[in-house]
Amino acid sequence: MTATEASATDLDLVRLAQAGDVEAFGELVERNRRAVFRAALACVGNAAEADDVAQEAFVTAYRKLSTFRGEAQFRTWLLSITWRKAIDRRKSISRWLKMAVAPARGESGEDPFDQMDRVASADRSQEDTIVDDELQRNVTRLIGTLPRKLRDALLLAGTGEHTYEQISELLGAPLGTVKWRVSEARRVLKKKLAALGYAYD
Amino acid sequence: MTDIPRRLGSASATRLDRAIDRAVRDMMQVDPRPGFRRRVLARLDPEPVQSSMFLRVALVGTVIAILILAVMVIVPDRRSELRPTLAQREGPPSTTAPQSAAPSNPSPSKTSVPPRRTPGLTRERILMPRIANVFGSGRNGVAAASVDDNAVWPAPAPPQDLPGAPAPLVIPPIEPPAPLVIPPLNPRGPGL
Image (cartoon, rainbow over all chains, first blue to last red; front, side, top):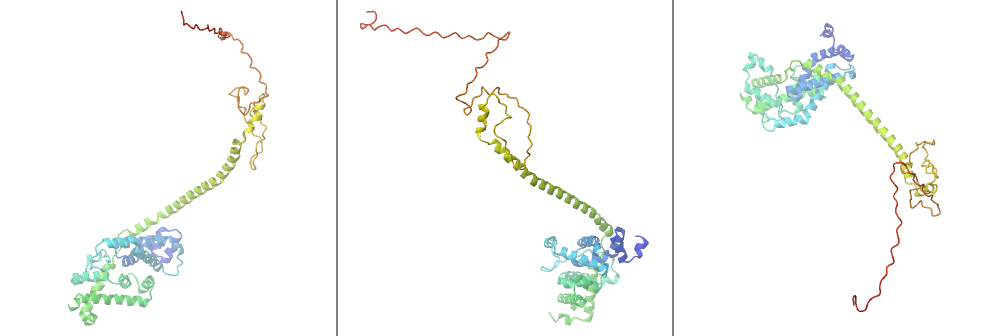
């Protein structure tokens, strides 16, 4: 990465990439890889598949780069491509076959939302270690039982990479609806946890 | 069960909120595997390959289309060429009669029937090479359709004696047999 590329805006890099500068596009990949990967992860729920979807999204963006006019932010445009790819992957037959073959971790009838690698859990803080592991496992499992609309909003909001405005554009829902979905997801989770007895601790 | 959330205490709610935040963070704050940029750029390379593949497919398709067109153009021409040829082959047998009626001129290049001309074919005369008559003179060949009752056939020339040649076979004339004499019958029997 050159100093020019490091100080350039996304739009500058897009212009360079449109002119055939592959390294400029590589810099765009570096800047947006985390946001793209986590958006895909929120949708497909599996780190390996999210990695593949994110790569596909970047490749598609590169091929469609000539259609990008700069009217929206590059990241927003890229995330919309990513989300469509991820939705397609989630709907794909192979995905469903895999889900049908793999045993569900939770109760019968729940959405077998795959749980990804716990990379972040390796560096737990002192405070985090106090939290009950069993409660954590139950919360994670119950997130998989949420309706998709609530779950998508909750997970996208939890990535730390996407603003509510971006999530709103990604999901094609008004900003207020997105915020309500996040709040509703949390309420439903707490209700289910309370049903499991955690409310009386 | 609907009143359970209302019974949640603030401490429990905070604890559950914290648990939810932590679970979501653990699930989502994951980074792609190292080398992501390299993997993406490596997948950009097949683009020119795909375009060259497209060119190859287009080239093969063009060649196939040209072949199909060529076959469609050539086959009707061949049919129109074969039609008069077959008609000439299947012509009436009377065409051989004048040829036999004039045995002194057995050349196959001359015929009394004018060749059929088909529109579209060349009108230039095609000179065919003379073909030797491997079957000998047409005089010795007799066909039912070519026999002329009034024709006078010349006698063949006698063979000339060649030195060292075997003596000609002489067949003596056949003598007539002696007349058969039958003696009169003896009514008393023979020797009596």
